Structure formats: C-alpha cells, structure tokens
Image (cartoon, rainbow, N blue to C red; front, side, top):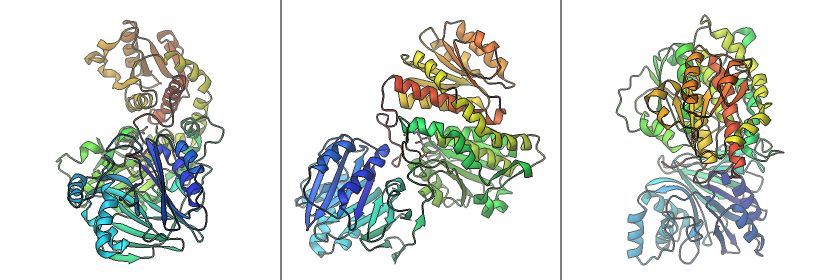
Length: 608
Ligand code: AGP
C-alpha cells in the first residue's frame, strides 16, 4: 500500500514529488524517500518517519533536478528504518528504484545475486530489483532491455519506477497488480500510484495495465505490454474529480470532512440515476449487461472491511427489493473456497479504492467461469473498475482518511439503486424507497447537526477499553461497521454482534466496565432490542443507543441516546453509519490519536 510519485519535465522535480508523496501519505507512512538525477549524478534522500521529515531534508539540498521518483512506505519486509526506506539502488548508485507490492521470490533472486558478488544493505524484497537490473545492464548496456529482463525474473505484485544515471532523461515504469497512473502535462509527465497525487497538475491520466512497461520522458510516454508483446502510444483519460475535493478545507481531519460530505455523497451517487417522480432508477453502468442480469438468480458479493459491511446491507436490500438470493463473502476467504458456481450467479465486487488485492484476487478467480462480474467502485479507472464487465461508480470523490466513511454511504446508496433497478416497480417498497433516497440527504444533514451532542457522549466513553455494538435486521451490519470504525481509529477493542446473539455468549462480558452501543432505531424488531438492552442494564452494563427521533421510552432505558430522523428500515444503515462514524471520530480525537492515519493501517490494501 505504498505511495509512488515521479516527475520528469522542465520544473524542479523534488518539490512536485514531495508534494505528491504528502497527498499519498494515507497509503502508507512508515518512511519516505526520493531519488533525483542531476547532470548524470544521482541524489538519494530517504529516512524513517513521515513525509514532512523528508520535505525538511530535501529543502536543504542545493542541486537542481528535473527527473525524480519518490516513495512513502507501508512496511511489508523489514522494519521502518532509513536503510529499508525506498528508493533502493545498486551499489554504485547508477540505478534507483521505488516499488509498491511484494516480490515473492526475492530471496532466491537475492541468493543468486549474492553469488554474483552483489551486496545488500536492507531487509527489503525491493532491493533485489536495482541489483537485478544492474546485473542485466552489465551484459547489454541497454537500460530498457535490462529492465524488461529483470521483470521476467520477478514473481509477485509490483508497481515499479526506475531512474538511472546511465539514461538520465527518462523514467522506466512497470505495473503488475499494483496501480500506477501516468499524468500527461505540457512538456512534462507525472507518475503516481494514485491519481490524487497528480491532479493538481493535470487531469489527463494514463492508467497502466498489468504487464505494461512504460518509458516516460518529458515529451511522451510509450507503453509496451510484456504479455501481448505490443507497444503503443496510450490514450489519456480525464479524471472526474478535482483537487479541491481532495483538500482538507476548514476541517481538522479528512475523516470529519468526509463524514460531513454524507449529504453531498448521497446526492452525487443518485444524480441522474434516481428519478422518484418518474418512478425509475437509471443505472447507465449496468445497461450493457441488463439482458444478462435478467438470468441472474444468485449474487455473490465479495469485499473487504467496510465495503464488506456495505455488502451485508446490500444482501438485505437485493433479497427484499429484487427477490434475488445473495451471499456476501469476505474476498480473502472467497478466493480459497471451492464452491459450486453456476452461470446464473453474478459476482458483485465492492471497493472504494478499486485496488484491494483480496478483492482483485476474487475477481481473478472467476475470470474463466464465464460469470458476470459487476463492480461498485469509487476510484474511477481503478483495477477493479477495469476488471469487471459492468459497474456503478460511487462518485463520492477522493476519500483520504484511512477510515472509510463517505464511501460506505455511497456504496449502500448504490446498492439500494441496484436493488431497485433489478426489482419490480410493483414491489410495495419500490416507490417509498425511491422517494426516501431523494429525501435522505436532508436527513443525513439532520444527523450531522447533532454532532456536538455526539461529541459529548463520545468523550464520556473514550476511556473504555472494550465496546460491544449490537443491532438486528438492517441494523446488524450497522453494528459491525460501527465496531470497525471505533476499532480502527481509537484502537479500542470493539465488536459488532447480532443483538439476538447476546444470550449465546456476549452477555458474559457485560459489567459496569463494558459498554454497549445499541442500534435501536424504529423497526419491527425494536421490542426485541429493548429486551437486549434491559438484559445488559440488569448487569450494570452502560448503554449508548441510536434511536429514532420521538422515541422517549429509550431514554429511560439507556445511559445516553443519539437520535436520528425516522427513515425506512432499508435506509436506516445510512443514517446510523453517520452517528457511529462521528462517535468513533470524537473518541479518537479525545484520545489524541492520528485520526486520518491510524497506526499499522493504510488506505488501500494492495497486498494480500
Ligand atoms: C475501512 O474503514 C477500512 N479502512 C478498510 O476496512 C477498507 O474498507 C477495506 O480495506 C476495503 O477497502 P476498499 O473498499 O478500498 O476495497
């Protein structure tokens, strides 16, 4: 999940590369570094710690350079030290490399190179790459050929960028399972592992594909695909969001900004799609497969983390509105199962980044099954978006905080739209749900307006070490997602549970030190949730509830209540999520933690 940035052109390269690394820090932030080529000399600056430290070091450099590559790391092999930071180079520092991914056969290559007299200074898998290129370069004196030969030896996943004093006016790039885009400027080119790092300079980007090897100069980009053995001058695509969306604005953290974007997120996910007055949902991204969809009698949803919990909401929606059997599986488990798969089953991949390795692997697994593969993705042009036969973009704009918030809102909104588009207008829920999707942004704003009271409640519980989240029906996935949010930003052990399971074990944990967050919004199951709350209170367990505005009874039962507007059971998870996201956010802030960059995590998990 590392960040890669490169620049070649007329400007000073280092400031552009470092600024790009800062915008990618959410992808990984153990250590950072940059390699610059100046008058056929190489300058490598790298260190453990955040990009801000690298920025200070680079500012002291006196050389000028118009070619550079940089990297911000999430450690896979070797601890986050300066020696393990990228760029890595060959011994005489004529070849410098940054890499995202994992070289699975690095140990065998390292042993072979050591036998050839090469010495290594790091614990990383990456360091074999510059030495391997050097090994082949010594035989051919041709950097591009040496790079391609080295790539043939590598097994695993990679996004690689190379600069060299042998051929100082180019950046060589290769992609296999780890995203890389090339930004097209005027007399200058950019490289990044995520478009958000280049969108300040250009909206024209080239998305590299697996097995692509690109040669980038200040005047152009030529791509050669190793598998198809074909070279091409690729066509650039236009990015559909601007840097304003990716900036912090007046918010203290991206997570809070992105939570407060919920109303806009629901609107943009519904724009041009939800037409309540005409009683229709129009999903352009599915039009090309609408005929195939008619024969689908089962949908398997694959995703990870928050996207998986969105999928659980989607399961209820698709079964209730579209009458289609659904199974939701963790992508990391799906790829190892040997389940029967009929052609009337469709695979639905949900992913904010569109680069999650496990979800990509799940799609790859069914590549030869001949089944329909649909995506719900936020990052346009991402790997998953390009692997699926059709899909519906979330249009939530860049999500920078590691904790996914607005993407969940967008995903559930899109799942409701897909359920409606596959369902029949004669379904009694069709019109009410369609109308509710139009009314939802205003209701989301009402939840956001209660942020100050949620903050007060959160601060009261910030000292706890454990938390149970419970819900029933549509609120069960809300409980799971609420627990994940709290876990990943506050480091509190939180687990989500079906409320009906309390007596099957979890109740044993409850005492005055073990609070419960109960999703107790209006529904046909509310009385049963009341019983769970009473069982907890009888054991002195503190209870924070999310309830529907107007419910006075709940206040007598619980220690604290967060009220949200009345809505359909089917859209309950969207409003509940805003409450649980704010609750988690304010606890993390109360604990003075790095809310946008939680320890040990990264935004896009592009390695398995
Ligand atoms: C969510 O808050 C987490 N950051 C994480 O669980 C995330 O949802 C998961 O890694 C899946 O990412 P994706 O949606 O980009 O595939």
